[in-house]
Image (tube, rainbow, N blue to C red; front, side, top):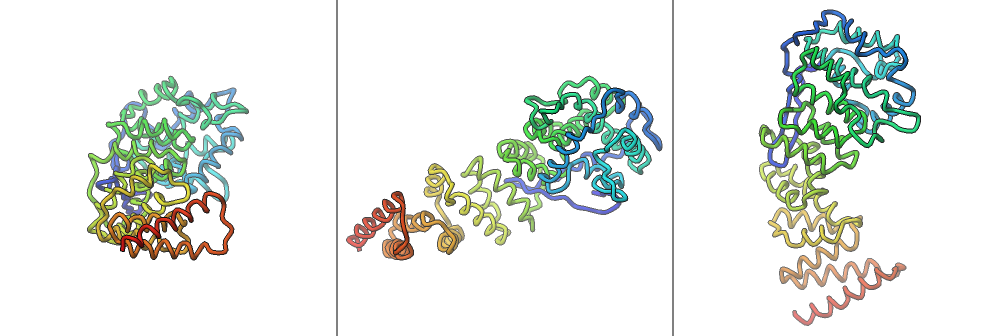
Length: 376
């Protein structure tokens, strides 16, 4: 794809493939209806200017600045503006988006209108700004966009009117709504648009990352599932994207996470990274018992067994993970190895103050060693 004159390739790993959607980036047909030309006079009128209210209050600007930090320093609108050759964060030392005054807003809109983008892309970016204006009335001194209980732009007459008059295709309308909602902290509503069957989203890794960073794992998995059927197989050298997918699966479906790492047999380094992530999650101090129980019944192959051994024997691994490894050997009849591991753990705890739960575990360990010794 071409972004701001530079050739870039965006890649995403799903649980079976890598998905790249360039729907908006690949579009080049100009929209009919409203013609922008070198300026956007129509947008600066009835759609973007409201006499008694400026959409970008200090509270809104602060909320967007905080959301930008949460999204690794870049909102989706920032990326869209880069397509137009506009830096959203800084221009001559001055913030461009969000504008601080109606005068800045007019200059900002004019800079979009005078960009080299085709009319459809200009209309889509303008539509994002119309959504800003349409939703501004919902923000009060005590509520931000992220705190709205419902989608703040759903069924909005102003936005719908602009989309109709500018002839923005429905799938692009949904795409821009999804980006707007994500930029405004409404992850659940955003994913409902971005995972719609008619939408092929650009920048899927950032969508997944935003869902993960905000703790919306189920929504992230919903988006991942929606794109899997249309994915293109591109599995090489994509550790960061695969890690996002693994994190989603670990929080939603351990069995699927286990299967996902097994699919990476052609990329050993990637598989090792995913296995480390798998064991770090399932054997952490905060892991649920049900998750550990699931892990214990998975039949490990040689690669997985070696990765488990490496993880559990690390110095910073919790004691219960070392006990898990010992029990893994017990279940496979490797009693001598299990005894050695149990004894090593007990020696490491010698002389350390133990709470009641740790004392119970130590006694269970000693009993296990005695019973196993009788079997040798």
